[in-house]
View: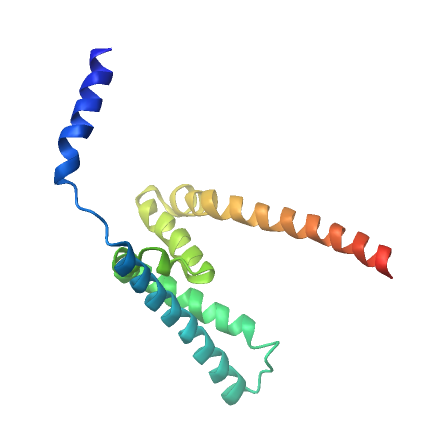
Length: 152
């Protein structure tokens, strides 16, 4: 019982010294950085459409690939972590945020070797996300099939 009381007292004593987060500025930073990442994606897509004769439908794949490569390189050089510290949730745009998380896991375990370190830990996060994506797509596909059969 004494341990619980000490934890409660500690939380009460430290409360006045804790910094209060500035939610408004955090939202502004997240919006600006997230918006910049999306703007970069749009610029890349327009670049592929204009200079490589892609259509709007087909320009998505090389755009995503380029954003993934940029995010992986920035993670490898330690820049993406600084962006994440500044922007918070604004750096979690799905494509770049996922690339950052996978690359971070790979870099963290590189000392254990390519197969047992990088490859194994790379798919701890990616595996769960991929499985969830495939299962969700299958469930939504079945729901869409039923709806189309009922309406059509």
